[in-house]
Length: 340
Image 1 (cartoon, helix red, strand yellow):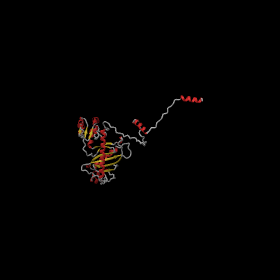
Image 2 (cartoon, rainbow, N blue to C red):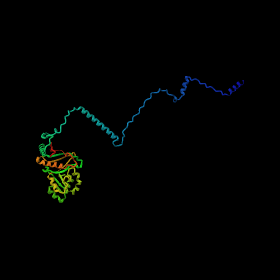
Image 3 (cartoon, rainbow, N blue to C red):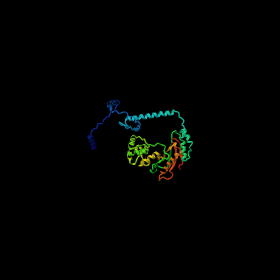
Image 4 (tube, rainbow, N blue to C red):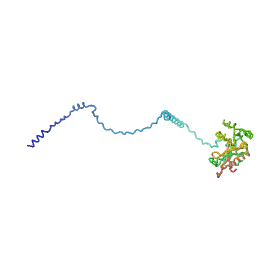
């Protein structure tokens, strides 16, 4: 009994909890709820997940830097593009023309002798190619094979085994031709006023400081040889660029700078010539005219060869003269014996 009373008291103390009755929504109720819901709360129908697209990286193209002016300006770049387009167009046109034009048969190149005149070809038949002639025979052939109508110069060409870049092997000197050179030599003497009469008496064509300075100021070279004493060379220094390239600058090695003016004039008039090795090691020198004949040309050739041999440098050993040829102006060459 006691337990039943306790249970009744506990039940009285507990608050009553009302149960919520949830009514089932009918279709009409659902429509009413849908009308009350705002449009923003409507959920879009779920879409099927699409395949993920692979995004490729975009390649960046370098744009040319355009300047306001100069080679990289917009105008300059446009001009270069137009120029290239024109060149390409010309190249296409030329290729089309070449493809259309009929090809001509190519002729074999003619030798140097075949391109010569008929007279020259006939003259070469008189000379044996590999034979070395004596001085007299070679000079007679050079005179005989001269094909020109004027009085040609007989030239001597001596090939030396030297290196002109070396100071001691730069062969240079003067020689007086016994029979003369066949040229009318105009001599100018750069001397003071008191020696002008003496120089002209010795055979000078022009003499005096003022006369020669006037010619040099006008760049008029109306002489072949210029002679000067050593004391006056300083006054010719400012004309070195004018006289040097023409070989007219006085030089002690060529005998044009001397105190004996009279002797220098006589030798220049008599046929003194200057020889000098070129950059390839060859001495080229005219030794007379065809009208001299072999008898006068032989002493001239011997004098030149003797002077060249005497100028052999002491440091050079072995063969000094490699070959010697003689020829006339525009004529074929004849080989001389190096033992003369």
